[in-house]
Length: 231
Image 1 (cartoon, helix red, strand yellow):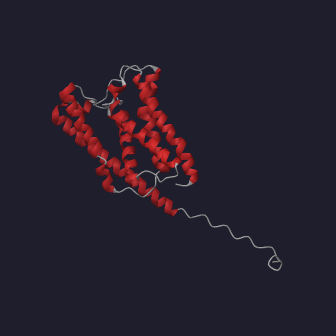
Image 2 (cartoon, one colour):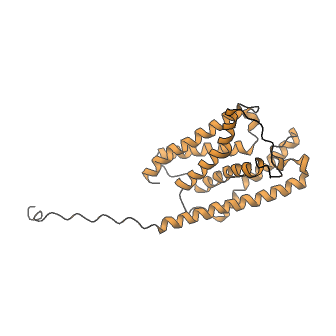
Image 3 (cartoon, helix red, strand yellow):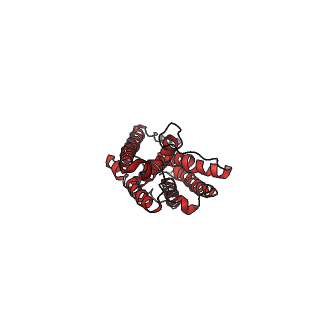
């Protein structure tokens, strides 16, 4: 990363951290507590983005290389999943898994927007603007599914204990294990394709960077006539 981009990346990433903290704190002002929010993929992905952004800002401040691109791609994918699922599935009245959106106080409303809209957009922008290009591989899209699959197992086991499920498409009481399995398979394929999209965009940006012609070196300044004789 060039010094100029590094100077831009540091405040940008600190802004991401602040938005994550603000989103969680403002959301906790509503009926849910911080501990009650932790089982949600939304909170876990936002915390991952906040920690990663803080770590990346620290490395940029120290002049050290960027964190591994595969790890950053994973974190960016997870927060993209959060924003996409919320807007297209949970908050979309046309979705079969739409959740009733409660009347939120202004603070809680802003917290919800930070977590589901602002932070995902900032994280994708950080990945597009400041990440090293050409380092992602198609196999990463499959590796990145490890966390969503682990979250699925966590949500199902937790549901057996507390008899509550964080999202309608994971609710065994309503869908049964067959229905949840079908939903999980659909989302897994979708997330895998989304991961491949990140890989494809990364490669396209890498090619574009190689195609940009380098700036020509400045022509040497001719020495004034007679300067050589005067030496």
